[in-house]
Image (cartoon, rainbow, N blue to C red; front, side, top):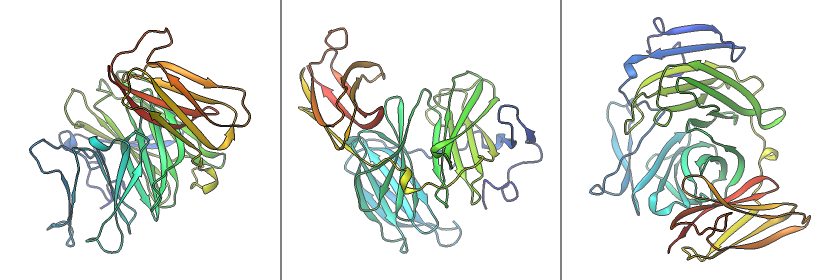
Length: 374
């Protein structure tokens, strides 16, 4: 059963189904709500919980008889507490992506293809960003990672630990998601404007103009909801039609449960991505010493010359505390700056974790975390 196909799913489409053209989008959409899922954790929004007295492992269960019975086929022992877990399949390959609190700079991929009993383990760089979701298409893995007020879409080739940056987005609010279709089309959805009762979603996707150049907006008056605890998910079917699921949570619960809404519609002109549209990796950044007190050196290098380099330093609240720029150097390849632990007003900052962001010609290339200990 395909939960995104109105002809196949078991939701009460007769009572809670509305057809028509919404003025905010200008194209026909299907809109659906079912209160039976109000207190059920939907599969679009997986959550993982782990307590100190539980085993530090991931257990994979497999069913060969349409979910009537499950057999444990793989156990992956973890070195620390699990922070994020995501599972995806392209019909042939199975991907389990996870991240632990102890290894925030790394992502772990467990991949199985022909034999569901065998999983290969890969460790790749995350740039210090938090895993949000992951998708596999043949030998390519796409990952959505979250930093301080920014999200990054990375592409990994199996066997290569260094990611390619596909796109980065400034994230003002917490609602966002990313998906890849079987044909290789990419789509990203996020909440553009904050409103206590209206959800305002912007869709970004690949079209003939280039990577993530397609744009479309959809908004609806849903009534009061908790923006931080609500969630959004996007899927593309075989025809690249978009199905967006909105999980509306009213109270401040520990997990995303609430009322589920399904919004479907066309993303005009969406196309699959090409390798020419990928931004190649071209930067490295190191922070030494780390931890530091109160001074540290941020060094960076590029594989090709750039015109402008910028290093921004943020606190855990996402506030910029210091910025360094190297301007007017048409052949800039490498450099270094020293931060003395003071903000732009020459005041010493407090002990804590800080995010270091490296930009090249206006594009974010690397992010890393540093710890100031006094």
